[in-house]
Image (cartoon, rainbow, N blue to C red; front, side, top):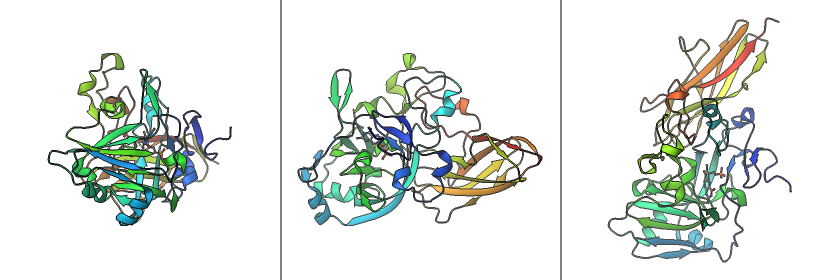
Length: 362
Ligand code: MTE
């Protein structure tokens, strides 16, 4: 069977999971769709465009069943650029500290920045007329995932105040064309600034309730614990339910282990943060954090997209570890040591990003 996305480095074929080569990742501000990572927990469902209906249910005065034509005719179309980052991005670095069995060993490629188009979630919610007490918006996908003898769609939820923010979309297009099957055709949620798991693909139902989703991927997975906690000892009710992304920066080019000849190294990468904050600066060090050089940032400084950075460092011959760290508009900064934030599922690694390079004398 041909790979679902030939340009991606495949992590698993069934379900399909893969991401681009890291050096290719940040060449363009808008990630071309063929280079946009894919994270699936199960098989891609086949959905018929004509019979498809989006259900809006739960604590609403007017439950809805919306066709794609209903969405097009009832709500104003909006377009925005936003990054999606998987909570498991950069897990591979955690795996060098202690094993994380059964999880995808993502490098820093489980991220992309696309132009999304669709409708504001808040417009759809308004049409359903929310009842008092509704506090969480629950999304359920039409994929069928088996767990413990039971089958259900992938799901998750976001608090109502986030759902009512203008950047949260029910999207039918990615980079100017209808969503491909693998990215959620015909409709997905896009929750900028949150972990990718909340941007539910193949969206079947939106439901309003007083508490977060009971779906496995909200109530169990995508929670973080302290480094000493292991899966066997975890009290799942006490894990932190992930939502907003923490500040992060990654050097994409050159790749780790590159040998260089001409005394100046050009470093390019991406930075991202959550919660509507902005990337204020990205700094690079080649001497373990004694001195830092500030990188140039891409224009725009939009809170929902990624920020690309570029810097040139002059180096004499030798072996170096180059580290990047970003600071956001709340002055949040990345932790130095990944061991202090290691967690047994391997989520949200935002420690200083490190690459090793060798500068030769010739
Ligand atoms: N939605 C459904 N229905 N099923 C899934 O497996 N994976 C989630 C999210 N939405 C998933 C889903 C995760 S973990 C991520 S990171 C993003 O989709 C990835 O979106 P992408 O594959 O379009 O990059």
